[in-house]
Image (tube, rainbow, N blue to C red; front, side, top):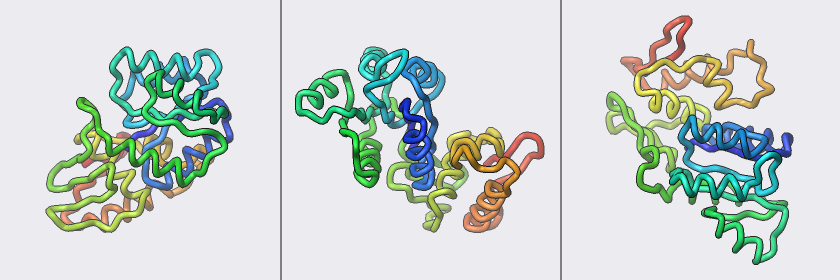
Length: 218
């Protein structure tokens, strides 16, 4: 599942991104409403975590703009106001769900997964597949030639990016930026170790190739 976190509290945004990446989700972050619209114009997301109180362009304005444009992502709106009237107003802007701050992280994850299961028409396919490998991006289960794969959340995230690329190379930098915390040392071998482990679990013949200077591909 690909998630865009739109939150101007940088520490909260970083914490959410790190946690959701540990869950195997592909996460990107925007810190204001204008940037969020730029990113949604350039990429498809499954769910947006959208703070209502944003600089430059409010969460309500972002929500209305995406709703008017027919953008297929589900929207989970966050707000510091938890009154019933605020909930009704937020849903009236085009949001699919609403969560008041402070919130339980486990509840946030549960709501994200529930939104991911409600796939609208035109959304990115729930199941990605290539050459006998399939991944259900909502249920987070993968198979190769009908054989279940026991993958960690991070390995599932790598596999999702490789499948979504549909044969195009995915660089080490892109894997690191999408699936690891921004504080990860670029010199670390975490990406290479995870890909190596994924290769081993996928079995022979290995479907993952590495093109020096370009990246990994299926």
